[in-house]
Length: 360
Image (tube, rainbow, N blue to C red; front, top):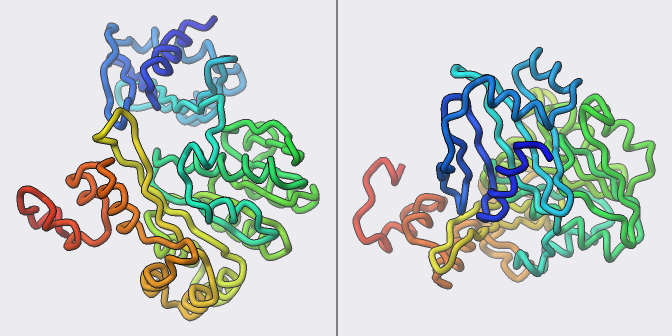
């Protein structure tokens, strides 16, 4: 057993989501969104590098020493998988590890709205799950893919860097490809995917113009494409995709996106106040005729009103989702105010008036 496994086991037993190990510091684990020091001594450069390299393949060690950055996955059978990130910083080497549970939580366990399961059963198009880093995008996507895996008879192909949740083939055939190991890049893997007879393609992260363009092309040619972006809302997601392209291509992309985009789930995690743990607030856009017209006409600011007037179709704004969590007593008004879009809606609920910076 690798020595670092003891830290991973501690993180899992404490209900932690992340482990941080930085030169010159004590190890820390993130529990319910907050970093806590582990009772351990400060790690020296040499000690930490030995810990990190014990679980890192030799070829990846060389890559890390050349670039100063590294991503890969590591698994302790029967415990969990971990997404590992190594990077060099002023004090020396650092490792950050995200726990990927061995068990894929179902949509029911995550309390995902029924519309998310309808996304899983689409024949073609693009569905995006967005939000800041650590907001649970991968967990939500895994639950949606799990539902498709159990209820369809298709080929699911995942392209990730690194592979996170591992889906066993159920009613579907599932193939996982890791960028950097099984394919050079997302764009290379996506080009290959179009010749690999997939019905559903998961693109772990839509990072650049080429990947986004190929993902849109795959959706336009009869595939169901799921992807993630680091955007905070449905409106910003549409704008982000369009703005990646040169100005002379943006109108064409808007028209194509209006046709292929089927839904956006923008989520944010909140610390629960009623019990230990966290919960997610989901903004959900279903691209109906009204939303499609808004995207095509470059009036994305109107998507908010489309969501507000289409709740019967399963849509909801982030602020409405936050309000529901607040009404149930799951989250604090302070965090609701911090993460909401319309500050004026939640400001009157605060015990003390918010300062001007918070309202900005």
